Amino acid sequence: MSNDAQASGEGIVTAALMVIGDEILSGRTKDKNIGYIADHLTAIGIQLKEVRVVPDEEAEIVAAVNALRARYTYVFTTGGIGPTHDDITADSIARAFGVGIDVDERALKPMLAYFEKRGVEVTPARLRMARIPFGAELVENSVSIAPGFMLGNVIVMAGIPSIMQVMLDAASRRLKTGKKMLSAALDLHRPEGEIAGPFAELQQRYPDVPMGSYPFQRDGKPGTQLVLRSTDPERLAAAEAELKSLLTARGWL
Amino acid sequence: MSNDAQASGEGIVTAALMVIGDEILSGRTKDKNIGYIADHLTAIGIQLKEVRVVPDEEAEIVAAVNALRARYTYVFTTGGIGPTHDDITADSIARAFGVGIDVDERALKPMLAYFEKRGVEVTPARLRMARIPFGAELVENSVSIAPGFMLGNVIVMAGIPSIMQVMLDAASRRLKTGKKMLSAALDLHRPEGEIAGPFAELQQRYPDVPMGSYPFQRDGKPGTQLVLRSTDPERLAAAEAELKSLLTARGWL
Image (cartoon, rainbow over all chains, first blue to last red; front, side):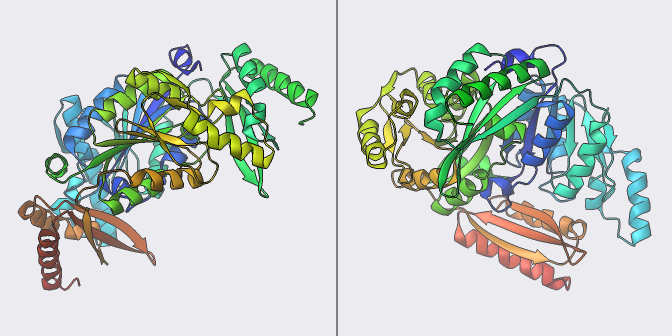
């Protein structure tokens, strides 16, 4: 695999995702954001290289974000920016960066207008959602107004999927993106164990085109999806052509 | 939150999960194992404290498993133990432990019998699935025979959900389990911002009972699920009773 080489290559933009929340780790809530964010980043030319799910504990959040932001172009977080005491993401990110945090007028004004229009009481808890680390840019929330933010290379988003998704769109507009990871997939109606040998040989001849093999069952019969990936369309096409002729020669296509 | 204190306490068993696979990070495959394993571990009295999704790269797998196995009672892995060249989990785990790896007679014999019975050709690729690190115990696979394994405190399982699930059952029988994390949940038909203040005060009086708040929308109206968690049934019941009387006093229950 040449992913690490690619990650340091020109035009390659990488990311990690931190999913913050005890409820994911206990199983009470099933994460719906990892797959969505993976698809989105792949589509816009950012390579997701790592995901961590961490509990609602400041020391854990600080350690993870500091490890990841040093290593990848961007770090996205989901969860922990609501009004209740277990929402500690904003404070934890401020701590990780060693900056202060307070209610931010840019966040507060539209929230107050939104609350007033809807007759929602302004509680100290709700004002917590306007707490933004010093130096951060806001990330717009067109669903429920209370914003996310971007501090350095860290993008902090809500955990509720519908809100996360509009924040991800808003944040994406200001991110640099790189070469898109392209892929080609072939469904083969043979079990994985038969194609493995020739597939491995093909991988050796194309070390810059990562190849994966994913078994499936269809109508009770085993099949294999072969996936080739590259940021270079010509190399991808060449590898795909060789794979097809290799399979055709065996009567498998 | 007192999770860290609890994690080091007597009778507490912790775990991390590593999901291994480029296909999860690219979005091509949507993970179905994290939520299942979280539920299973909670039910048997093992606290899942961290999840990492890592790519099919040996250095990444080695670094993650060595970080996690030093920190938690158990580390579970899913993915990367099939017959193809991108299945590098077994070799990576052997490398992480600094032990050798080779075809294991205990794994090979039932696999050969299974292949013969079904008329499946024995290919070098299929024999790869019998490669087990030295010193590991096998983890039975009643679905498709090729086993997982347990080396030290690391349990290596398949990525295909149906196979992972039988391996998890097989492995669980030999694991020590701890106090079960109990929980109580209350659905409140009020938005999170109203309950946040009194809920935070309750949390302060019960630092040993982690409390979480999860907003939801039902019939277009905002609601909040309040969740209390503890390994001590008496403390949980006391906190739940206080929460109920607090909500009743406000006319919210």
